[in-house]
Length: 131
Image (cartoon, rainbow, N blue to C red; front, side, top):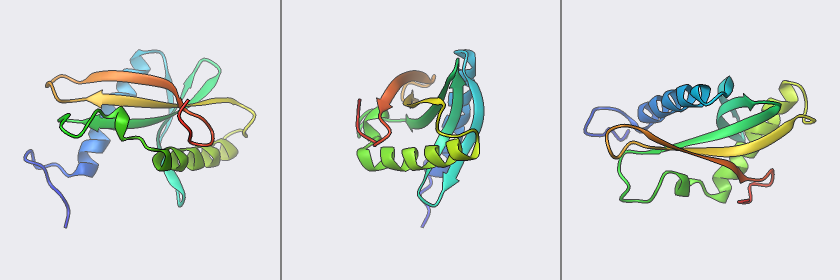
C-alpha cells in the first residue's frame, strides 16, 4: 500500500518536488547541476553538482513537519554509504575518481510554508562516516 498524504502526494512525489526546489536553490548559489537521481543497484544520489572544481554529491532531505526530527538528522550511516556507492559509479562513468569530490546534505524544511534550506558541506566522508 502506498502512503498518500493529506495533500494527495505520495512520499516519492514530495521527494521529487523537494529535489526540484533543491536543484533550483543550488543553482542560485552558483552550483551547476550535472545529474539528478543517479541510481545503481547499490544506492542513489539525488543531485550531482559542480561547485568550482569540486564535484558535489548531494543528498536532499525534506520534512513538512519536524515532529520526527530535522531533515538532516534523517541521513544515517547506511544511507550515506548508499550515496557513496552511487557517487563512485557516477564518477567512474564521468571522468574517473581523480576529481575533487565531496558529500553534502541539503536539508529542505517545508514546515513553515516557505521552503528553508540548510546546506551541510562535507556531511560525510567516502566511507559514509560523518565528518
